[in-house]
Image 1 (cartoon, rainbow, N blue to C red):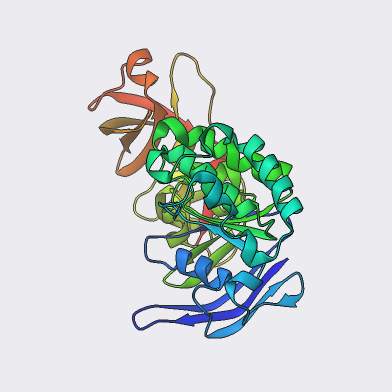
Image 2: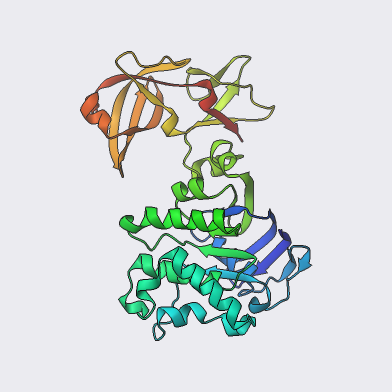
Length: 347
């Protein structure tokens, strides 16, 4: 549906280079990467707000590279929602309609549908100053969707919302995608949002795409130490592959993997949530260790638990309830393990 071929965008102090992406019809596609990697710039380039300096942008086999934003049949929603403060909610929603040449009857039907779907009927006469973050987001979505865009672009759509509204807003975005057969491209820093909403995505680093594919592949099968570290994979070590077991180069520890890595692969990683505490007759693991808890830190409702087995360090993510149920604490020796399928390989 959207094809970016050899896209470049050169600025005085930054550039996008050799961007090649295919976004399919009805994809929920996530663009992720470190701060300053070019995610939002690429989104604005697709929208036409920052013209590409090389390459081509195709939308349903139509070249839109040089078209102005209002001719691309795209809509964008920013993280600050960018509502017009002097206009009412209703006026904000209708703002772009005259510029798209949408007949009044058709626009009215879309308006009624969106007001009902997004629950806006009680705030249509308010101005943005009197709206909550969640209400502003819904108005911004309605203003974009009333144009019936071929693709909806979202720049950090949930980041400005407090936790009370975040989950509900996430469900709303998912409903829009599922029920309106909408193709969505989203920039996000929140991995839980990406994993829940997106079916495909790409990782950007320093203006270049370094990996793309199914969302689970990005998180479970990274292609480099950078992508592994970026998506939250910990326990990254250089390895010497063997026939059945993998030896960690830094020490003599060996682990069992579900597959033998391809020739030339030199590193492995284990996601911290895949390392589990063995307690009270819990399941057995082919990779089982005993080690000392060296540090525990809080991460929202979970704990980051640092362990040391011999000379080897591990990082695990465990529920906060383990403090109460198993008395875990720094200095305590515990048994833990992980399955061979939890071991991933990359360069």
